[in-house]
Image: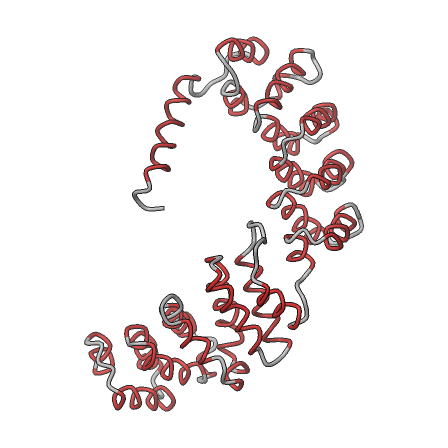
Length: 349
């Protein structure tokens, strides 16, 4: 209760903080240690970080259900306004070998700073890499960095960070591919087209070229769709192709629809109704009898009618029949309502 009171009252005198730091190193009761972590979150960084550092050295808490995350919670609370205090704590090389730090903290610290994308925080990432004492520590930091950039383009990184990444052993292939480094792109495309390569790795690289569109990869992604033997990878490639606008994509997918499995075909239809020009190609192909119009799900037909005027909507109904679900006007009204909510800038993100 005394520890909780000190945190609630934000009393951070040097003598009190020193006492709590010593208690963190010697306290045998896990509940008290948990409260110390919670108290540290509410204290100023200059008093909190020594307490946190002491608790991080308590290796017996590594497997505890709460303690590692309470410590991360305390550290994260200082990242925005006291990043120097956070990085200063990690200048203690011995801290990096502590199980809690290694297993629960390093990746999260790096991911937290990388996630903002701001130059200031990316320079903190560079600083963390420079002080990493060994390959294992640097590797854990890089895993956190890559998690932060998953699904995001990797452009405009500070030179200081690029130098630190290189010094730490360099970026992984997925990270280099996300930067569209020519050699990495070539290697990634080679792996994607290799049916004997690890499927999980192939899928990761396919997803990258959907998140960071690179037109030379279109033919590779189409190759997976048209000639691949793995349905999961075929669907991933179809999703990735939504990031491109080449009309040739729809033409080739439409021509190959009958050869696709029913499961993969559903994802193909989602691709084909994602762009106006592709939607028009799809309706024309169905009208010409290139594939069975009845095989197109209702929700896809309802999306197709949004890609044109009333004449096009009439054509869609003529080709596919009237399907259950919202009418065109009801869908447009609903979309407008949702768009206004998103654009208002208010409410819970």
